[in-house]
Length: 85
Image (cartoon, rainbow, N blue to C red; front, side, top):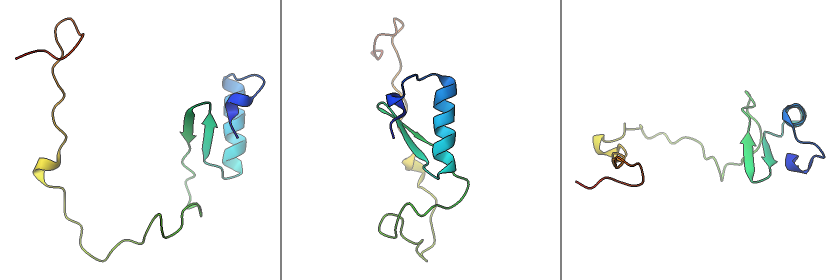
């Protein structure tokens, strides 16, 4: 259920709704266009083998050194966009 549909949405109502859904093992909750995911601290039968296949027997290799994300662009002194070199 979408908690945004509550008659009154304040912190207490949000936490009570999340607690109730957590106790029913509903770890995903919509609040308007926001999705809240709670850690259930236990395996839940949410996804079948087609979504989460068993780990392969092949050894895992660490990511290559070049796999790091590119650096962020520098901001201009005014903060309105990237600076020009």
